[in-house]
Length: 286
Ligand code: PMP
Image 1 (tube, rainbow, N blue to C red):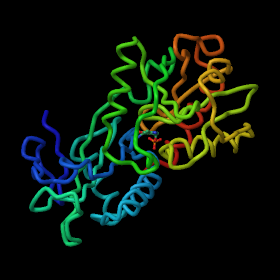
Image 2 (image 1 turned 45 degrees about the vertical axis):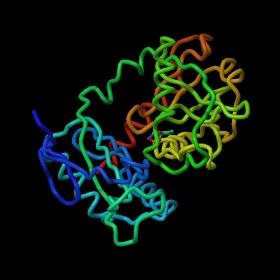
Image 3 (image 1 turned 90 degrees about the vertical axis):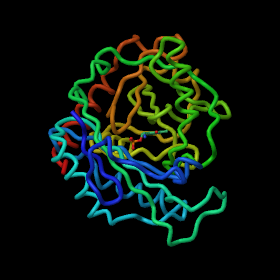
């Protein structure tokens, strides 16, 4: 069945939804995005995603296409029109379509492009990978330096996923100056002697919305958290490893570059955090 998608104020069948060939998202990757999960027809952590979108737009001197309040309305309307129960909503804002291809930004009255669409994932919260855990490889981090801005320049992370696949693994952890930055589309964590260790915030990583929530829940549950960088060797020696993202929540990592982490099975801290995250986020979903 055809989805209903949103393009610049209109709800359209996906076959009829178009953007200009001059759109700067298409020509320059001059755009930002957000992915919000939907469980039982409700949005998980919408406020966090709306705030980060605002920040990404501000960092790139890009106009906000509509208010956060209206954005919530569009999300809800897409859930309703597509009968979405479990899945994700993808949102993208670009600097819009100038009349020509030019590296310089177009004039301020160029309208940003705003598109949203749904992706149904009935097993989103029951992903079998939560029971088996995932395997990752490490790769050199070759992305640009402003990874705190959630831009649509995702070619290197895509290449990283393909490298992981070619190695028979599920994802890649990127390494810069000897330390893990993050996964191709997630934040990376290790657990040692009960302490949860994840890289500190900065321009080197995306400030995950799930990361913020999970660390808050962990601290509330009196778990120890340390925000600092770590190496692949340290991760291989850790008791547990896991990742977080809006679409995987908390997902255990059981192997890094062919070495089992801990017992080589999902660890208890990751399992507990996954449960807490899903329970607490569902309670306040909108
Ligand atoms: N890091 C990167 C590079 C990502 O692409 C993502 C997911 N978009 C994350 C971290 C996780 O962020 P969030 O929890 O907000 O999905």
